Length: 330
Length: 163
Image (cartoon, rainbow over all chains, first blue to last red):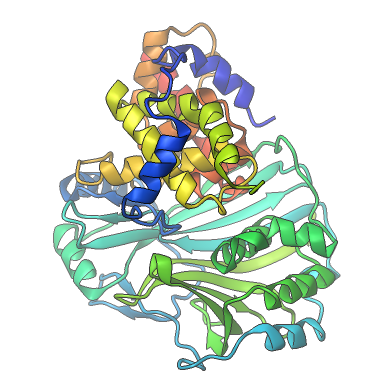
């Protein structure tokens, strides 16, 4: 078990409220009328959490931590980005597309890929553990109290998990990266020295349930949230690749399902943020002012990266790199 | 009947309204604030009714969490920092046993907001890890890791309050 029962036992009695809640003040019909009579609320974005970062407090934390943390040793390159002055931070630049203007629909390209996939290294290996190595940035994003200057800490996670979810992980929080030069310059003035990184290792308890990856199209389409559209699908594809070692046949099926989701556009060849060549598709979400990007290995169909880019201004909002997936006994 | 029509909405509204109000009350909203939050959540649910999953409660909590975060954006929040969990003292094996409410509340209040949130979702909203992942907008694996760390830090904090 994950310890949920113990947590409820431990803090349940400290629940500060009487769970008996008052009845609704409006009827469901009245609330519907209000929803339809008023302007739509600001979209509930999938966009990353943005939290207010108080520079002074962050500096204290940084200064305190730097005395105990070990030198940072990044295991991955930075890919698209602009390095600042010596000791400065990385400013993220959106990935350049081979097809930047008027991209065609992605369906035909995805089906062609799906029909000719080669095995990935993970297809040739066996082992009790599913191994995932992932780098993420942008969840959360943090800003000054005016909301103008933004930063996010990247982190790398390596996970070794048995089929029930138990295993171990190693998480390394990396120095901050910035979505624009102004944010980088602001934060470097405020906090010239950031703590170095050190891996944090821990044992993972089993999941409460651990359903296998569906092998049929209908089950996989449901898991990928196809009914909710391209943005949700992009996120779910990424989730699946983070949690499973996806075999060749299922990778082909995922591409085939993506081919039928309206709105995905083909962007051709790209280089992801880890410097790997791939092919990209994007999904425009004008309601949320953002674009989802998926990068695949053209030969194996393995997902390499997922990014969300805000459209105006065009800035990287989050990125996730699937650096390695394999099976191992170690 | 429209699958996502008034009947559907009325059902989820009456089923989950109280839980959303309590979500707000547990996060320091007064009665009026919690009621307003719940109304906003269900207004969003109606407008986005085609997006609401069949098991709607975690999705509704997720909306509540984001609305609350937006409303508090202008106010200082606990500073999110690189994970410093490795600086925490090892937990005592006995720390979970026989601790008072005051100690638990004090230890919980001393944790980072992300740690508090996942512990509240599991401990008070009684969500599973998979449901908490929906609320937090992360993967189940990430939620499991966050919960595991948060629990360790809570236990460590309790051990310190008792020593």
